[in-house]
Amino acid sequence: MTMLAERVLPLSGVHNFRDYGGYAVEGGGRLRDGMLWRSAHHEAATDEDLAVLDRLGIETVIDLRGDDEREMHPCRRSDNFSARVLFAGGVTAGLAPHLQAAGGTIDVETARARMIDTYAGMPYRPALVATLRLYLAALAEYDAPSLVHCVAGKDRTGFAVAIVHRLLGVHEDDLMHDYLLTNTAGRIEERIAQGAAHIRSRYGAEIRDDAIRALMSVNPAYLDAALATVRRDHGDVPSYAEAVLNFTPTMREALVDRLVV
Image 1 (cartoon, rainbow, N blue to C red):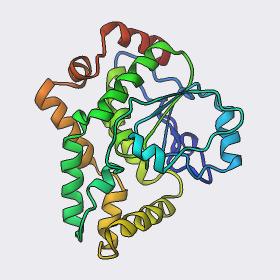
Image 2 (cartoon, helix red, strand yellow):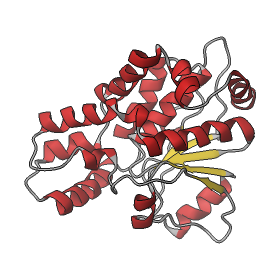
Image 3 (cartoon, rainbow, N blue to C red):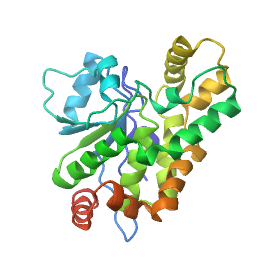
């Protein structure tokens, strides 16, 4: 398995930027490195960050945010940027899942419970579902590096990556391992502090530090809640992808052909 230090790009203004390839897949082989990238948004990307991103050869960017979020936090691009940027449109009330769960004065138990509830509904969020359809279609069509991101690069992005991992045959232990790297990848305390400032500016200073950390971190129970919804309604991820995300056997063959070595 690729080590954490090799997965994470230590960018100055983009959090949680990492390669989610390299994992072994069922039936033999492993995901290609340098093809599947994930991150938070790029509003604060520095010129140096943008130069690093240019060198990755990313040809497709999948933006899981709503129209309102993109307007509030536009991504910086280099003068050399030429990637296609895919998003389905639609509004999200400007709320990433961790912000949706933060309303009011809450303690850590309430924060975790709200995150679990938010994740449980994630497989059917209209804007997310519509953009996931574009993401899977792009992975099947284009043989080039791609990047998927949302606001913090942990919740919607974490779910999207989990779906791609399972469709490609990554074991659920490795899938969860990658999801939890959000808690250790890059400058975690800086990311949490930024999230805390945003949450408190919106909802007031009464939210305790441990509740903030629960909102700005990931937890196995969060992703498990989303996958439990998938299994409850469809049995497994491939059946969910076929029924909800318009994913076909032909598309899966194309993904395996392009991304598994």
